Length: 180
Ligand code: S3P
Image (cartoon, rainbow, N blue to C red):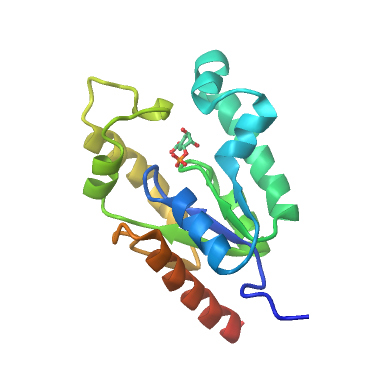
């Protein structure tokens, strides 16, 4: 049997608009591995969209479902998993994910995130139309950076070319696996 391109599951974290889903898909294709999107798992389990979960049940209910699915995915995941921007809610989750696989942080500049997210569609946390998008993103980033920064691997993911970022990640993972 041939050796898989990556020996442990890969979890992609980072802000909304960082490209976790597109880069995750590209990395999975490149490494011939399955791809899972945590947001889609949440929607499938709840039987409704994330916007509907926030509207009907509130953010705390969303976070409870998100973290329980993340914990169970971490046990069984193979391949590449894209997390939601707020999925690393606490130190316990970060520690758990890092024990199960590679944690990769996609970290494009806030200005690029704001540009990509200007329509704010489908993302309940961005629906405060009276606040500048950049301010909301900066505030969230400040809260989340202490968790994101614990990733094994960080990439700037600012080229707008998911295949290029995926190549970069694969190369870094191979170096880490070679050293592990
Ligand atoms: C969220 C990010 C979203 C989704 C939800 C909350 C966040 O996922 O999980 O709207 O708290 O940053 P993406 O990062 O894939 O947009």
